[in-house]
Image 1 (cartoon, rainbow, N blue to C red):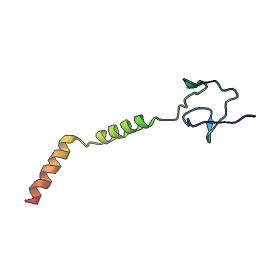
Image 2 (cartoon, rainbow, N blue to C red):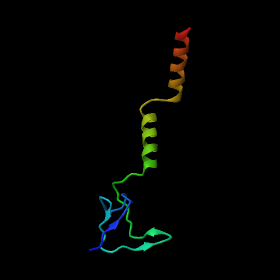
Image 3 (cartoon, rainbow, N blue to C red):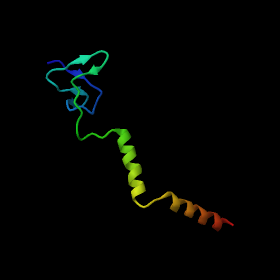
Image 4 (tube, rainbow, N blue to C red):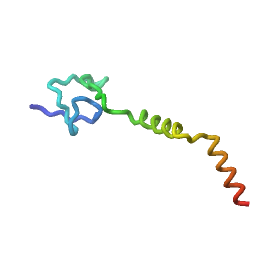
Length: 77
């Protein structure tokens, strides 16, 4: 059996860098046409946005930060 090395860990068929699909369809211009995204994988960009949203939801607002900065400035003098 031929083993195909794959770099896309977001694919359903990816296992430790090897494609486990029985048949692979590949186009030089479009790349792997067999690729099926896994449902449990989150894109890095989405994860960054989620972290920022969580920080804002925790009650940290920009107004609170500005008030804290003013308090620090007053304490220094």
